[in-house]
Image (tube, rainbow, N blue to C red):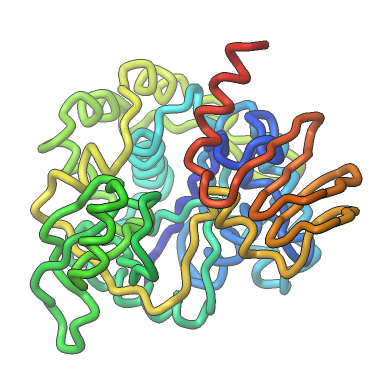
Length: 367
């Protein structure tokens, strides 16, 4: 199984505005049982029983809420998992948001310097819904075996429709007996509707989950070949340059690491998909048997609820979803999503979730 888990928790969550904001992005939103998306990711990491560390990489301004969510999860855990959080979880605050490549190579450097060994790492994000956990664990065993052989691995999600909001993976040759692990022929960008329909009809395109598995040495090798500037920036961190760690509300975190700051200053903001996944010839995937959603839109978020959240009145209205802090009356409307949170309101026709990010941009310009 994977020795270490890295959870990416630095996103801004603009597509779930206004419930999600830069100061309190969607990883801190709760759905059921009072557990946040971030806490669900931590529980997922614990379920894999990593022998090494659990690292949460986030923005420096989110250190306090990340630590708070870690602490508030402790009473819900068994003794062994509480000890794991207290002893082996570290928060790494980024000096600046740099998408996903920088935090991943940073995590590798931190693990290699602080805990010298071969690190087989699984990358989770803090905004996924995954179930059942037993199937995720089983698929992760296959992924860890593949990544332990020096492969760059991801999870391929069986598509349930012609979605335009996800990147796609084109399948290649199977490399194990039951055909659940295969070489990736090609990564594809988020398609338009016509292309997505072609992908779905073909039967050999899968959604890219955005979760990756690799050893520390594999990622460093791939970056050296395909993203030399980032490789060089982090190669400048001396082996003996250990960060100063401290505690925030009882949770370990990196308090100071000037060498990391210098590396980040030299590093471009680029996603791991662009820097490595789409370029490497060493990419493989595990066909996921678990259910997955990245909750990247209000259309996806609505599916998590059996009823509206908030006090509402509906008059000659149908098929609407309300998520509000204040009472809402719906009169003569259909197929709407209404969100009123944090002093702002979103009224959206169902299926228009891709427009929210542009709406946020315009709202910023008009204030």
